[in-house]
Length: 368
Picture: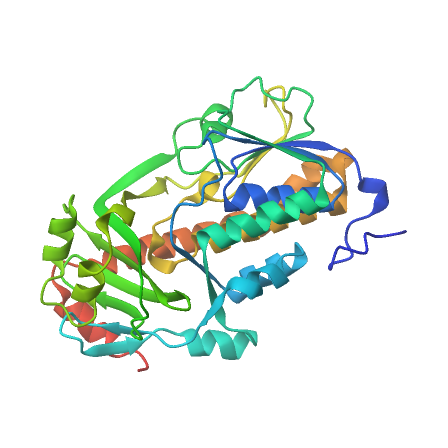
């Protein structure tokens, strides 16, 4: 049977080129899902409660597995055109002493390609450009999800983040956002530091990565800091260039948010039967399904892997066998994504230890 020549996996069959989907959320997970479904021949509507594309934020780390998912979605070339490799990074103490190396060299050796970093706006723009190229997608900004939306849709996809309205209305409210009591800050320095990785102190940490030539992505987590002055004070006396990064970047460009995760873990990412509402079967992707702390830097990666897996399952099974497609998606993604979320939450507790001597000793045993 003929396949879509633009589909690298060759899995999209002409016989399955029907179906309509309502995707709620125009972030990375939602837009990537829309791309995948359009490549499978579906008509897609995207609802986004924000008034414009969400280009806020700094950098995403894209693991080789997520790069492969973008390749299958036809976006690998766009990613590599704007991304930079992340190859050398260290874990340090506040005095600058190196405790260990991040396993970036090992990742590249095993995968045959390096971890990549790309700014959030570039990735969002690449996804939007691909949807425009494919056609057949309507994106409506400034419209919140309502249970009565798109009554004729074959599939509803909840990609609307940690505060997901789709999850709350279709899966209940037992699982929900849980705050960790620590504020995260992110920003971009207008110079290259040449020092990458994370510095772990007592109850706080500071990280720096490349993002594009002439700039450095930085992030920090501090309990209780609510102002730029408090953030700078929290890292005063730490090794160079941390004080310089905070001194020479404009606080008006910084983003602060409470660190949260989805708890408890959802028992299912899908609904295939019962009172699922006028939009029919439902699947959750990205933070709507498994929002996690940022410590492993895997939020965008898991969203991309979810999106590609869901679209691939739908393409293979077709709209006439959606229950089978959704079960295949869940079987591939739920346990994997929840393991990553658990690992990230565990790492957060480890990194922000109040008595770091034992932590530093344990990290010091890792390969340097």
